[in-house]
Amino acid sequence: MNKTQLVDQISGDTAMGKPEVEKIIKAFINTVQQSVKKGEKVSLPGFGGWSQTQRKARTARNPRTGAAVKVPAGKGVKFTVGATFKDIVAAKRGTAAAKTAAKAPAKKAAPARATKAPAKAAPAKAAKAPAKAAPAKKATAPAKAPAKKATAKATKR
Image (tube, rainbow, N blue to C red):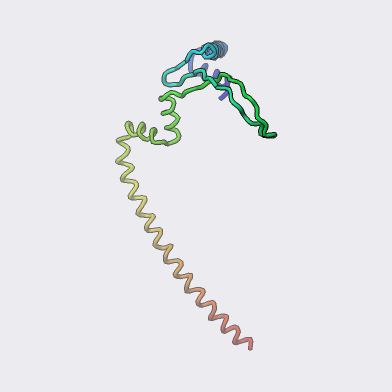
């Protein structure tokens, strides 16, 4: 989702017009950038937080020549995801956190699933039995074929 799509989505979900939403998003981004630039932490509980990081000076290598290159100290930005945001994303991927969150409202549905599972297992066993019998029939068919070849050789002589 890009900025234009975000503005469209928010204006559709609220009674605000697109120009108003765009101004709010620009103001939000500008405020976060200026606060982090000053060294302040910006946090939105449940969503995440931005903070400034310090990188030490170091010696790196040029991958083409292998020569040592001095990299000066610098500043960076770190975004830390909030716990609620993590849980929402994890629920979509089917992780353990999602299973525990989904169990609370789905307790009534769990017994229904348990009764359906054994019913599915029984037909699978029945399907395996004919599959074992089929190779036995194929084993008898090749035995007949060599007998016919032997008679064919006898008629050629």
